Length: 214
Image 1 (cartoon, rainbow, N blue to C red):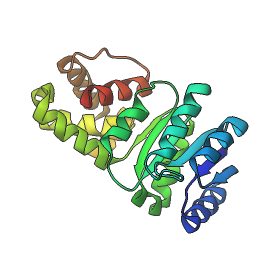
Image 2: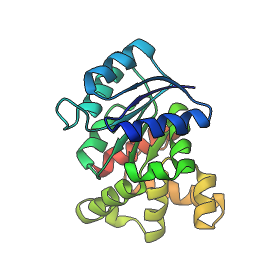
Image 3: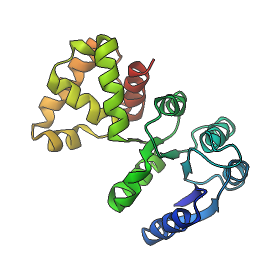
Image 4: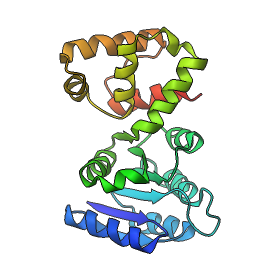
């Protein structure tokens, strides 16, 4: 599986390269700036891009914008974004394009190698890997400002795990309930939020997240 990596801090970049190679990934390119990232993505068209949001030269959202531009030119290009902080605007921009795998992780998650590698693989496979803290903030905001207040506490728990990209089986294991119970909660969530149920897990997650942050 080929990866393009963008991180401006040399030590972290080298550490990520080593970690990914240890787990069987091939590093097609490792760059430290936005223009270099865009070129690498278009040249190599990797299976997944792992991208720091803030890169030179602007140190604002250069990495994110390069990734979004690459997705416009290569529809469905899987992108996992790394950020130092919870940036709801960045999460919304990344999720606005409903094609291809997407992920948004806080950089702290990198230090849990199993969690990080799982997120990279999930995004590369076309799935969604959203940081639990980002999801929690979006859900909390939705409860205050939107009809999420109609959901029960258990349905909110299911929604958070669903939005992280977890399957019904994984949610059931996490909450120590049956998979049938999770299916029922999921149906209730979509009914209460007026969201069409679909068999495409990635579309379902993106629809929920888009609703939370619209």
